[in-house]
Length: 224
Ligand code: ADP
Ligand code: ADP
Image (cartoon, rainbow, N blue to C red; front, top):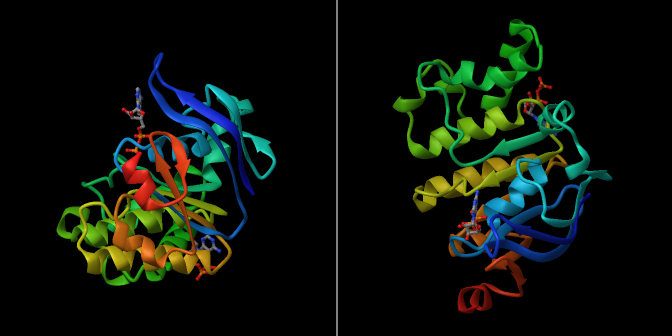
């Protein structure tokens, strides 16, 4: 379970990214985090990932207060998450397969084992035929699916995806969401941020954010 208790994030004095957020996300839920640019979506994901700390309030994941993790335990904590954050691109000078193997290699897996698991992860996102390709020869949608394979290769219980469908057409966006949904049906909690209203039609639960606060609908999020 992921729990936010009265969480506020103020980056610099007077700049509130999140205001008094309380919410609970059960294991295995697929959640869309919706709202216009600047609403606080990335900040909420970064607080779960321990990339940022709350200014006040508590973020806990599986009973662990994330802000209590220290510099040596944070990397182990993050390894249990599948992170698809913005600005964490693929390594362009390596194959798709090498990119997906990397988290396993970093975690100390033997390369033969890492290759088997990376190929299995690529199969899950329907990219087996692109294993040997370089990332730049792939379409934007395919690159995002490689990022998903890289994020899930460590078998995380939680996937956090920040705008994974930005810049994709509807067809590719659906493929990316379907790839994430496949992990959700295997029991993984997925939190996907998006400002794309069409995408939200497929969501079982949507959390609308507007100016750092939870709104009850898309319309009120835009109007706030
Ligand atoms: P979204 O993901 O919905 O676009 P963000 O969480 O990125 O929203 O941003 C929410 C607010 O916090 C914005 O006003 C943004 O400018 C501000 N913000 C985000 N990151 C920082 C930062 N590192 N320093 C200062 N302000 C930030
Ligand atoms: P294998 O057991 O050989 O790894 P699977 O078909 O079970 O093959 O899974 C393929 C890949 O997909 C795994 O390497 C893992 O990275 C990912 N995966 C499968 N199931 C899950 C799951 N429940 N949670 C997270 N990742 C998963």
